[in-house]
Length: 198
Image 1 (cartoon, rainbow, N blue to C red):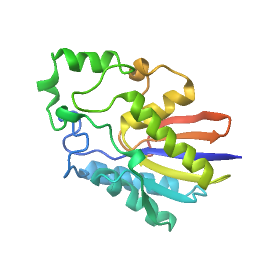
Image 2 (image 1 turned 90 degrees about the vertical axis):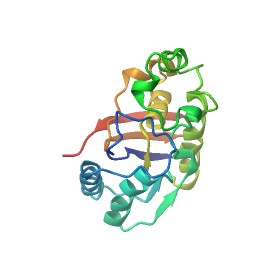
Image 3 (image 1 turned 30 degrees about the horizontal axis):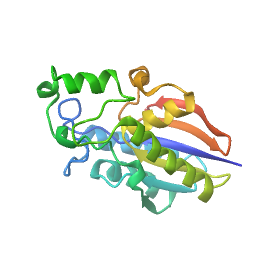
């Protein structure tokens, strides 16, 4: 038996590319992000989806709500889909982080580096793996949507492709994009990556 997971990265927000938001509250979708969420809802309404899950942060919930509404399904929240815990870096500007040795190590050695007081990518991959395993148990032969965050989705895709975490930069997961994995007791298969509905 298999379960198909439609991973959706949340839509764009005004801090995108400027601030490492992490799990900080109050990060809401921009007008572009709202348009992306509507396009995703229209795209996914054509699929036989059985459940919709999201990370509990505002930007993921706002992306997921139009999808759940279009599908006529309740929105369920999962902490296993939460953004990376960036610890002391949460809310820092990218220009402020540039040049810091720990930041450089994080971007070059994702398999072993840790944000100060935060979690590593191996931990992220383990919890998104828990989400997938639970999806296989609760949704056999079904299709589900999981609205999450870029690095979390990358961690799932890299597991499916058997890529080491240090190669995270080789995968693109754009805001408002869709990546599909098929999961079973035998593991993961990547069906598609980084589809951005028009």
